[in-house]
Amino acid sequence: MTIGRLAKAAGLNVETIRYYQRRGLLDEPRKPLGGHRRYAPDAVRTLAFIRRAQQLGFSLEEVKTLLTLARGTNARATRELAEQKYELLGTRVAQLNRMRKQLERLINASKRARDGDPLIEALFAEDDLG
Image (cartoon, rainbow, N blue to C red; front, side, top):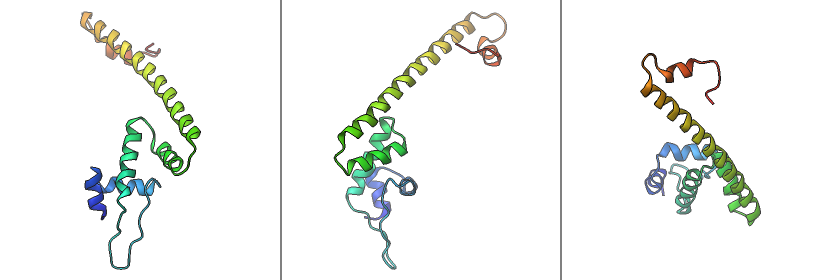
């Protein structure tokens, strides 16, 4: 299939597919003399893999590693990569929860404020918001 059909089948933009090719996530088929590149049907599956991995929080570099691991049988390496991502996501969730609590505190202070804006003042303050 052509890149246009591949993009449509995968629900992506053609430029996204080209970007994935430049990043080494998807092989670019040879272009026959005077013809168009043709992608194998499994390219749709690879693009779906990339999208699902990104939805789980994997970076494109990590997705590239996962694609390499998918060609082999190293479940341990795949699991270790997933465990690292899991820990990182836990840390990010904790950071987001702290940020959310800080914003809640500032919003509540703003509701009670008579003069000035506690949120703006906190952003201009030299000390940490924590």
